[in-house]
View 1 (cartoon, rainbow, N blue to C red):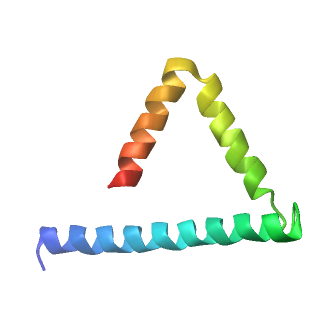
View 2: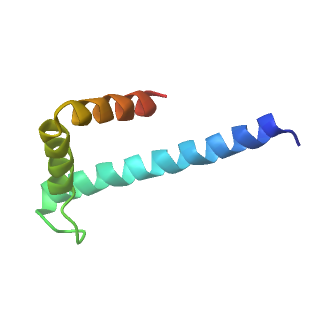
View 3: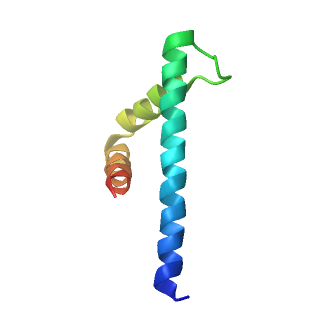
Length: 75
């Protein structure tokens, strides 16, 4: 087993984990829209709104952070 295959395996695991988390967020948002706030014990839409607000009020730092996160999400 070489280093390239180890990093490939780690990348596959992280990619799968990100896919599962993305699916859970989607299900949580849909459940909150259908059943109302706090159905799953957390306010997912409120948390997303707070995150976006943090980027918007962060000025240049918030903008740079948002660009870095979007670049990482694209890959």
